[in-house]
Structures are given as structure tokens and as C-alpha cells.
Image (cartoon, rainbow, N blue to C red; front, side, top):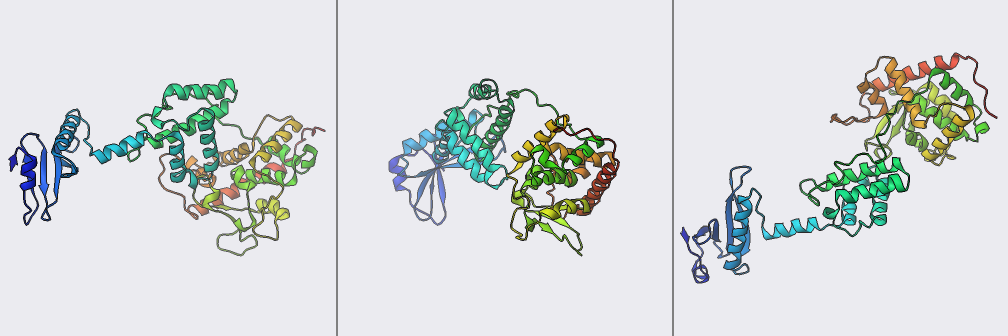
Length: 410
């Protein structure tokens, strides 16, 4: 039934056994619904252009929502639909408006709770986001108000004025990621990502391809027998060797704890292995690394009686490993390499042995883009054990071949 709704008429409508609706002849799409309990509600019907189906918006109860207001809301919704948009109820519109006024600091806090808190690198990323908010005055700005000009100016300041090109590139990556998260359906804190079309402020990053040759491996290994000559601790020396032998990340090795090392004396079904918790892994999934005889030879002098103690108690973290590598490089006059290049050297050994990139990724704990499977603790462990033994055999053969080593710097 369709009539021209009036306040007098609306008050006169009585409840029935089933809910019924009365269309408003004066406002297409608007109707009054009356429930068996006598509750009267305004609703608006429209055709969703995306699905082709009829959808409904509920504006609220009468008389809380007056007839004139209901017609005003219906007319606005009809115009939105005609323009190709999706009509929203006043409550939904308020929610959308609140999203658009979320400040940068508020969105960073939400992003931390939703994503960063579960990531190994989350604290560092949160620190970067917080510093950007403070230094560039973004904290109290609505996230949606930050433009590509603002983003470009901030990155230029870091890369050019502060002369930190690598930091500028990393900052761009972090900010691009949070804005991408912020504009996803269900959040829509911003309609655009101002970092999407910006070039790398620090220039294109050169590909990481450095690995050590056989002669360099022998040179380094011998130098690590006397690390004090380079003002490098025994802990740092062993940690550098372990990165090469296990293909593990420098941070994983630096933070090694005795309780993570399992079945070192055997016998066991899996053999000696290194069990890393999800919190210790970059991808946030637990991981098992097989330990070969060469690894155990390096580890035994450092094992503590307390299983909860760090294996390398004198090692502060990855930065000390980088400093140790730099001292050794300078002392030996080598081409520059970093602790991560030792990990790449192990991967190169496997590549030359004929293993595929996907297989090598299994020992590197890589989760490549496009791969949806999450490595379980024991997934591909036999393959990892096999590759660990290939690395060990290759290194032993390299170290047994002892040509004249370049003289160590005093």
C-alpha cells in the first residue's frame, strides 16, 4: 500500500498480527514499517547497482526520526545511489566520518595492535612511525589529510637534508605499508596512499649479490681463530661462523639461547637441531634448523650450564656483529662484506650444488610472495638436514685446501 504519509496518518496506524509497510507516495522508496508490537520505523528501499538486488536502509523509529527528516534522508540516499555510490544510514555515515578524522597517531596505535605487536620487527617499526609523527607534526593530523606532497617533503628531508638515504628508503616502505593497511575495506581511514607513486628517495637500492669466495672463506675462518687481533670477541667470532654454517639470520644467531638447542648429544629421531619460537622469527612462524657436526664444534665452548642463558652472553646484538665484520674487513683489506653476506654465501653453495631457489628458501626460512603455505616446524626438515650437510661438506673441503693466506694486518 502506498499513500502520502502524514503525522496524523502515521499515529493512526495500528499493529497487526504480522509486520506491514506503507509506502510514501510523496517520496519514492520511503516507507513506514509497523511491527506487531506497534513499533513504527522509517526505511528506504534502493537497488544496489553492484549486485542488482534491492537493499534497505533503516533510518530510525518514529517519532524519534520525524517524517520531514525521514524524507530528507531518503532524498539524499536516492541521489547517492543515482550517482553510483552506496547510500548509508546516518549511523554509518557518522562512523565513516569518524574514520576520516582519525589522526595519524590514532591510526598508528590501531596498526600496532592489529599488526606490529605480533612481528619481531614491530617495536622498531613502531619507533620509526612514532618519530615521523613527532618530528614532522603528523601526530594530530587526520590521516586522510596527509598528501603526497607532505610525504615527498618528509622523505626529501631524511634523504637529502639529513643525508640518510637508506633510512629514507626504509621509511618510505614502512609508511607505504601502514597507509595501504589504513585504506583497506573495513577501515577506510584514508582514501589514498600518498606513498604509492613516490620514487625511492634514496635512489634505487643496488641488488644484494655479495658472497665470499673459497679463498675469502679460508681467509676469514683463519682470522676468526684469533679474533682479538681485530678487537673482536670470541662470541662475535663464533656467531659469524655460525651464520655461514647454518645460513641463519644474524639476529637469530646473536640471540641464541641454550634451551633452543635440542638433542645435541642424541640419540634422537631428528638429530641435533635448533628450535626457534615464532617470536624469534621474522615471518612470525616457529622454525627448526638442523645442526651439523661443524656447527656443534663451534658451539660447544660457548654452552652454558643454565639452559635459559644466552649462548653468546658477550654479544649485544646484530650491531656488534656488523662492527666485528667491519673490523675484520679493514684488518684483512678485504672487499666489504656484512654478516648477512655470510648467509648469502651459504645459499650460494647450495645454488651451485643444484638446489632450486624454492628448496634453498626452505633452509633460509623464506616465505616468498605468492607462496601461501606457512612453513610448519618440521616441514621439509629432511630437505633442510640434507642441505645443511651439503654446506658442511663444502666448507670442510674449502677449509682443508690451504693456499697461502694474505698476511693479517697488525
